Image 1: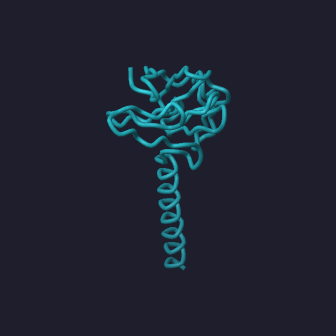
Image 2 (image 1 turned 90 degrees about the horizontal axis):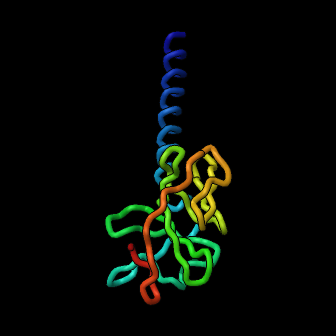
Image 3 (image 1 turned 60 degrees about the vertical axis):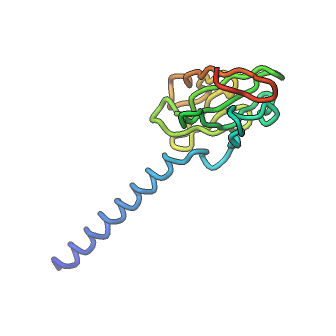
Length: 139
């Protein structure tokens, strides 16, 4: 009887450990399983302006490797935000006119970084960018 109880306990503990690893893996995803990831531009720049949909956004990385999203509210106007969800630090991904957090379901407006739906309660922090010719660069 003791061996059976210990065996069940070991299986339950092992299963919980595997589930925990799965949760950590989900929190570390860079694009949330959806959305668009920008290809780094040769010679600098975050993304080609033509790759950023008007009214939407794409994922990108800064020169120092920070995860961001770059949006184009109107043709030729660009804004960017940290892609780190203000709820618990998962990486948000573009989803149409919104940014979606794959971990807990928070949603943000792509062109303002404002919270659309929680549990996040703070907007995404702005990142300074500008248009330089046909590409978006850090300001």
